[in-house]
Image 1 (cartoon, one colour):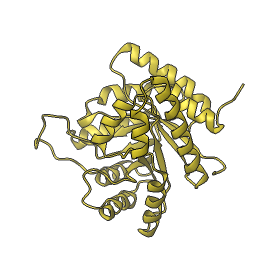
Image 2: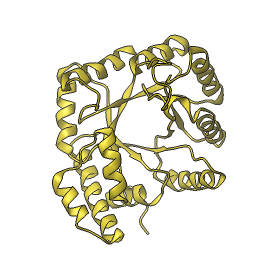
Image 3: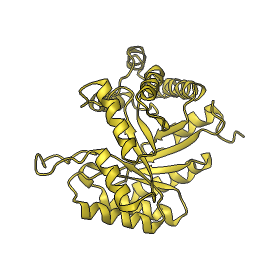
Image 4: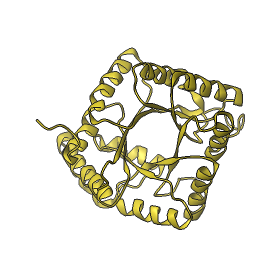
Amino acid sequence: MTDTPRISFEFFPPKTVEGREKLYKTREALQAFEPEFFSVTYGAGGTTRETTANIVTDMRRDGISIAPHLSFGGDNEETVLGLLNQYREAGVDRIVALRGDMPSGMGAVAQLVYANELVAFIRRHTGDQFHLEVAAYPEIHPEAESYDDDIRYLKGKFEAGANSALTQYFYNPDAYFYFLDQCEKAGIDAPIYPGIMPITNFTNLARFSRNCGAEIPRWLRHRMESYRDPEDIRKLGLEVVTDLCDTLLEGGAPGLHFYTMNQIGPSAAILNALGFGDEE
């Protein structure tokens, strides 16, 4: 295990006042694990632009290290530059730069701007103001033409000025370690942090995984599908993901990035099991 693995947590912007209050309680509880930063997602085509920006500026006002996700989507350069200036004035020093997705219904009205182009745009207009995180896919991006092409594209993001990467979640540690080996062979030496998705509702996870290209190992799928009690699923999920995190850290992963789904319990339970929490 690395001496000081970096921990970070990802949130999504809630749509209701109640959801926002829950988010702040979640953030306060997870702050106990002394994360390097929290991140806040950005809806397809900027559909959560204002909500994301408001949450980010509110958390910065509270002294929290926060990283907004950012993509062009259907926005023009002026809109994106306005967000960058807003974040810079708020004291934000980290951004998760993504290609993002177009919102449904836009079709060919707007053209996707790839993450390497966004990274280059940010560097051109803000210099080294921001630490730039980008996405990586140990099990290959679902739209990639080949494994090697996907790695070359990741390399392009770093060549454009990215500092580090956060991976899509996965449950096979060998996929991550093999990916790191191939990245090293391609000349990538920046840190790549594994993304961790706790398992709570397996039905929802399986559906989401089909859409984003994350593989659920066959043995795990069969075990999960054999359970009817949600508590049994929760216990197995905690065991599996804790073992995954332990294997990753023991193998040299530089840290862990948790997809929290705005919940305290699952991520906190894993970190406590790994020995990161203050046990009483």
